[in-house]
Image (cartoon, rainbow, N blue to C red; front, top):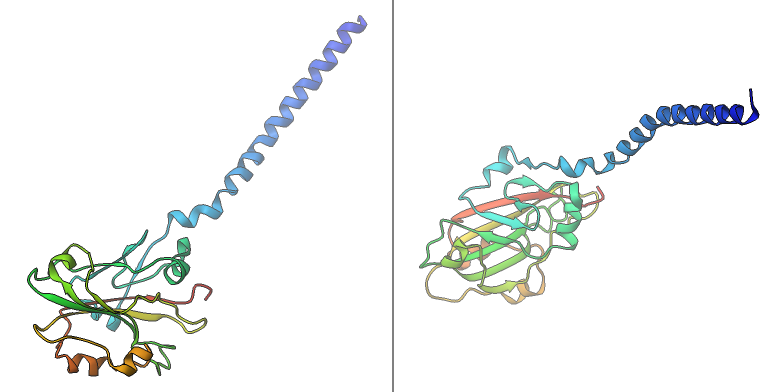
Length: 221
């Protein structure tokens, strides 16, 4: 056989062998490529867990508390996916609060408190005040706009490490006509260990017209 023909056959055989080897390797490469996508899978399966038992009984009146990307978190646990627990305690500002049943001619008092400070097992600083607004117009509350008088600036939920889940409760009261609601000197100094009942009695707020809560814990727990 001429030398040139033998070299051509050898090159053809080598090319065929390379093609066979490549075909054998492709499934493994494809499998590794698909496997590399799995770490992102939880982002597509993020779900909310609803509260149950006595925790769910606190939620009444269809009061909505809306955070970015999460939507209405009322009566739920804040999920761990998308760094939501970190973002609610470090990044996001105050939520939108909407009460579709608000009376347009009335004003309201809204508060956000933590009854589990520093922990639910030992709530010695209970009803830590995270937010307090008065003179919230009903017409704007129906639209999710809060333009009332701020007595306590919004403070993000920041449960301490290893303290378990904390309840963050929103309570909405119809504000009595006349008079001015204000915090006392000691209440202005500290937001912790707040006597919520005394405040409600002092200004004759009565029972909340609506209430809701969400539960979250430290993002590293």
